[in-house]
Image (tube, rainbow over all chains, first blue to last red; front, side, top):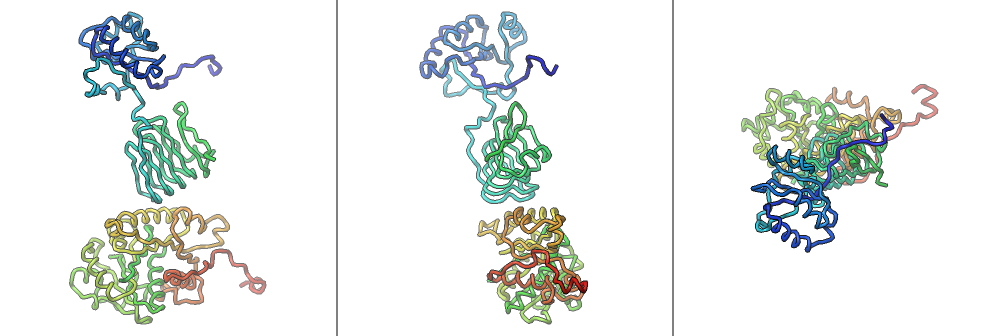
Length: 239
Length: 269
């Protein structure tokens, strides 16, 4: 089936989620008006998932869909940890029910906004890269040494020796040779990248996908950056 | 204050003791007051290389335990007056040393000598850590082969993190690379790492390159440090090392394959 015209594949996306705290449509509408007024362009045609797990009683699902489409959102489906029967009911009404990844189900509502009945939340691939600060290491990282940039990017001004290990939850930049191991996006971050001025690594890994030396032949000994494209490691020349 | 120099490597058999002996004697020949300490407790070798094995009465561990004074344990070299040797104990193990007492001994020696050269045991355990702990400078002895380079890299990491200077946040230990058993011929044939390769991996300043030489084994067995063999390439290379340690700029020798002269080819020399 190599020449099939279509192919199904799983991918992760960042979606906005609307958490409902009341089933009173009038209250929801009022708060939506206030929220959207703050940034009308930002919400235009944004795909939206509606989370219903904080609702004490059931809600008119069709009315919720109509309501949010009225505000120019693209309705995706409902989500939340709810009873099986309720999930079944939602499906029978013709709506899709979206399961969240485990990491995000425990996210609690921000306490400072408790009076607001609705709130938009993003399910990002945690943690978000643009929030990372840099951990800078000056000097060579020697065999047997291990450096971990927790919730940070790692910048090494020097080489990483064979038998050394550098790990970051964000990106790794090496201004020198990479001869040891480099593990970026250690907590699960598929956009993490590894940059080095000379690739002679024992192992590189991004978000759990790894290469041993033998997979790096194409760009061995040259300045490269390594990234993920569709969950496949890719190396590209820097210069 | 004396300069405390540790001769270390991580890997065994690369030439630490040979180099310690040559460097200690070479500095003393230049008129400096030098003490050589054997930190390889339980595997005493330095006294053999220095040719003073029959004169060992007390050793480093005796001094540490207060069973002998420094002056009782120090052996004066017969060739050069300004050189002394503090031998290791052959009957004890490396746990016999402790940081505090080693520190006291080094402090006392520091007032008597210009250079303290510490011959480290192989490995990265307590004995090697003790030898490098108080060092101001380190001579990282490396053979031009991958496992030795890897181990030297490991030791460089230790120098930067486990030494007294690192713990107190002082200026880091000054690192020197000493490449031993170097054979330009085998480098040219691609069997051995070149000076450039090793420098690239370790990225520390090069102190010297000692060519592979028959003279080294001969010197060890005779108890005459190879630096005394002024005719040999190895002896000459160690003399260059001494000049560089004392701040002179000396060009590196014995890095390329020597071309045989027509005469020696004719006579099969």
